[in-house]
Image 1 (spheres, helix red, strand yellow):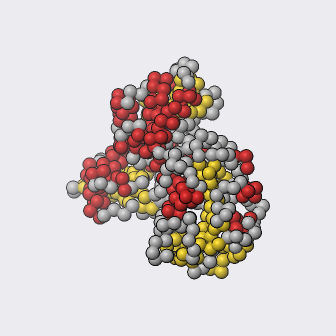
Image 2 (cartoon, rainbow, N blue to C red):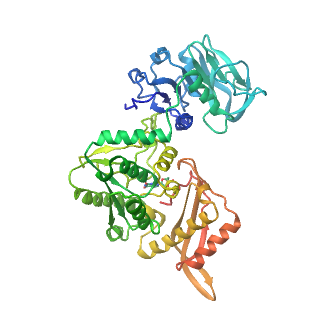
Image 3 (tube, protein in one colour):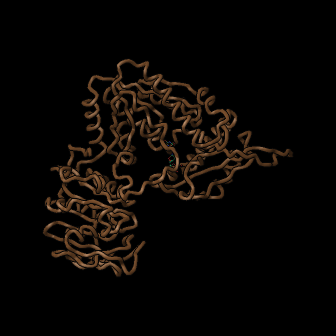
Length: 520
Ligand code: XMP
């Protein structure tokens, strides 16, 4: 297991909660480094001097399913403060001699908790009303407290909503302080890390910038690095960071697949080559991609063809650069966390994601992954510190296979041209109406059906354009964005009136799940 050895941190032991990453984010938002490790991977030797406190996450398990999780009880003897959240609270109680059983009333959603006793954990949390609204999500609960534990707060259904063993600095919370639905939940986390673990602030984008530049310089030395630049947030930040760290020893390659958004290739070259003076090779591979994709309509085949060809072209150009030793990638912390499927259930593969990002393993290059400890919002802040424009930093995500997966059915030059225009009009309208930044991702798609319309006095028979705009935290779940009728009228008129080939516009009103964000 590779933990960052250089910073004091709060270690989060993940038992499979959907909110584990949120705990880490909240701590980092408070200016402190935190790392997540799966309960299956944690070993007592990993808990070095840098670990100042431990949080046990929630999870879908029951504490009596002891063969389904592992947790070395010796961790409790390290004299470190421990905060258990939901399942973490239950396991902490059980390991200390308490009891857990199925709740009479399962609690999902909002509940009120009432203060019973003062605690450092709840300092300035309750206020004069001595009650707070919190978000519960549990079927089991602690039924008997271990020795030396005291009740700090209770709800109607959970007597032990917050508990503590003051001497050992062990705390248990039955609800989820990390979710925004819990009123002032961040205060509890802040009290735990600052008042109880006594850790100092050590995490900000400015610190990160200098630290990462130094780390890259140390890792790379005088060697050359190549980087696949897509123009998206992650690869742009990696490229700019390396540019600052090693200048002309960085070689970026930007492949135009022909499936990019309108004018994207022009913008990327302008920004990175001309403005930021990054060593950039522009590869126009439009024809190659389109000929390989000819008559292919199966979404998985499209993704595979694009992914494989991308790698081939990248390798072809990378070979032209002599004596390269490193490959830079925009791997982020969520990609790295080793706690995937901590309950043992493999999430089934829904589609071959991120295949374009998966660069060749057999290139004999060492990896440079400077963002591997950062969340997306931290990468954005770092990008701004690195003087990348807000326009690059706050762009909506764009999938590697690009417009290919926004055009079900076969791909033709005509369809690409129409779709690029429609997407361009949609995104421009969102920006003009101040909506772009309220939306997590938005795009136009072209459906492989033609419908009848009437324009002027003529009958038309043209493509159907689908608009998708969603709100989301991380792309894992999503809801459709609610536009005003006037905006929808404006955009549908603009698209139909300005683009030859489309005579009807529809809006996608499905959430994820059951749909996905992309169409294919
Ligand atoms: P879905 O469609 O699975 O998309 O709900 C979730 C997020 O991932 C993006 N996406 C991809 N990104 N390569 C990528 O780099 C891919 O193959 C890919 N497929 C989907 C999608 O745009 C959304 O942000």
